Length: 262
Figure 1 (tube, helix red, strand yellow):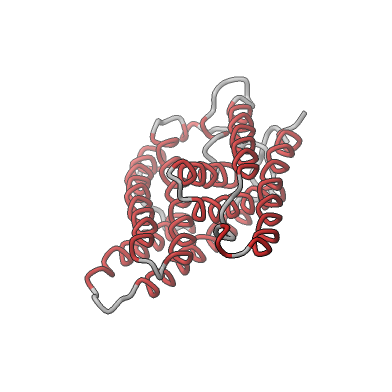
Figure 2: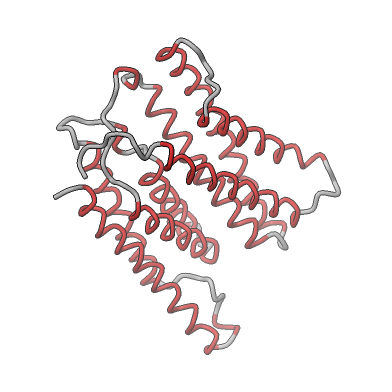
């Protein structure tokens, strides 16, 4: 059984979370506004998300042993690891009793997981230049930062009218920036070890620099008193769109790479 077939139950579990959430969204208005927020996930949604997260973890574990030995590249690849990170953020929000925010992130995780069905699931064979421990560190920090940037945009747009709740989105963006900065440092060190230079004038490096500058600018918006939470939410949403454009373009650039495992 190829990795593409192994991913089908994972996608089905994410689809179940999305369908259960949409079903609850249709039914709640009939109960009246005092019965809870329309966006809050019910317990079946939580169980479906837990099942999706567990199946996804098993899929990543299977992917990491595609070549008969552990390969971190099988785990830390954007199309398969990004939805997993978003689902983990959703579960963390659920455990923190922030149910409306958890519902929003869960829906986004499900959408990204379903979009991954369209992409090849095979693993790119490791090269001698990827043997360093800097490689999994780079990809882990980069993809988790992407997830935090997306989560920050979703929460900011959801709660920008309420300053205490907007603070959660701001913290996600800041921690995303910290992890993304760690990715830039580890990536530069890996690039130096593998290619004898810390930076290349290529698509990936230039776009990473653009994302870093974009969110560095966001952090400094706090020095502008007239920049409201609504404007910050719009800025974070623009950052998520910039990131999405990068991820889509990257799939076309890497489409021709040899993959093993289906």
